[in-house]
Length: 175
Image (cartoon, rainbow, N blue to C red; front, side, top):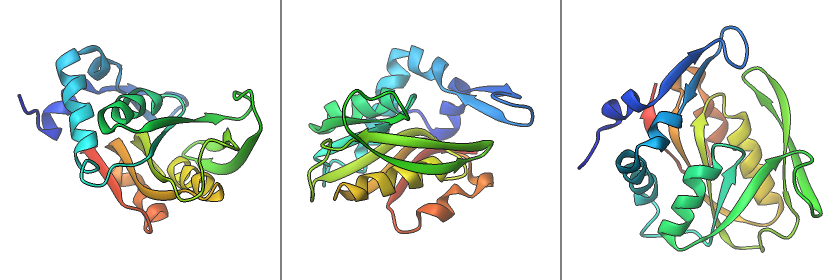
């Protein structure tokens, strides 16, 4: 079975005015709950990276953990959680960024990546590009060779790709 990106949109629920008025939240929970579709999505999101697999997949909190960890298993890579501030129990490195609806910070353990390791960053949605670009900066602070950013959904109308011009960016579903 091969589901097209347009067909995948049927498994993404639009939640208006979440987390605040004027935002349409793209909820991937229905997609995750369908074992066939989820398996297909993991394959789709992994396919561009099989010829040159990463050493590590870095998943961005929280929904990036789900496809990110599955992709890391599929590609034979380790997994690194990139978390919001205060969630990690060890020494961390931090990076601030702007959101579509505010500002936030990301952290990673200071020893999560060794200099020169190839890292693929995974998240569920690329919106304004703030989170993804912060994740790239964070990995590069640790000396990672960021081979790309893989997202399930790209909200092209928010032009987040502009903040990632020096990164190989792949998305499966575009709105």
